[in-house]
Length: 220
Ligand SMILES: Nc1ncnc2c1ncn2[C@@H]1O[C@H](COP(=O)(O)OP(=O)(O)O)[C@@H](O)[C@H]1O
Ligand SMILES: [Mg+2]
Image (cartoon, rainbow, N blue to C red; front, side):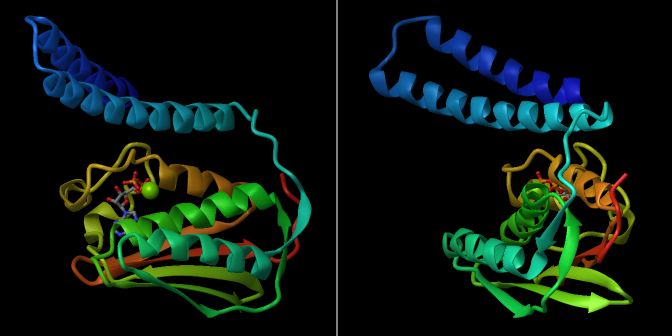
């Protein structure tokens, strides 16, 4: 939960800082402690930002646009951004299908939703893997799928990964980078557009996240 996630890094930083101050040390030793603290500070900043967003969302205080969004252009754009993200890990991000689609909603939030999914797909891929993004129309709705061939998610974990702070053991072992809040935010954005988000996955094989959005629908 939130108190645990925020207290743990504080306890770590306090311990390291106290220890460093206990007696005079070499410059390099201070540097190591400060670098480690900076990492924890960055992590906590992300958690606080994401938690504040979610609590504002809970209270109905997040403003949403109700404007036509040309989804294919948005997807092309996030694909470009994700390609750059992939380059750092030698992962190729492929836009395998696209079609002209307009949905009603908030362009910035939708961008955030798909970037979060692509960020996960890249992060939980193995080096030199590929990530695939596709936009199609399915059963009268816009369907965006983000597929990877990465670490995958066990069946019993799949319903829980959308919960706040839930990260699977294999994800934690794979990388420390993560807050476990991204998919909770994605769910909120999808549902605010009267849409849905789903996952299909197998451990060691990869994962596919699918977002369905109504083509024309007034927002709540
Ligand atoms: N593409 C993926 N491949 C494997 N596991 C994933 C993927 N996307 C999400 N997950 C699992 O769902 C959890 C929650 O995702 P998210 O909220 O984005 O957290 P984070 O990215 O901070 O780990 C992740 O920690 C991971 O266990
Ligand atoms: Mg994430």
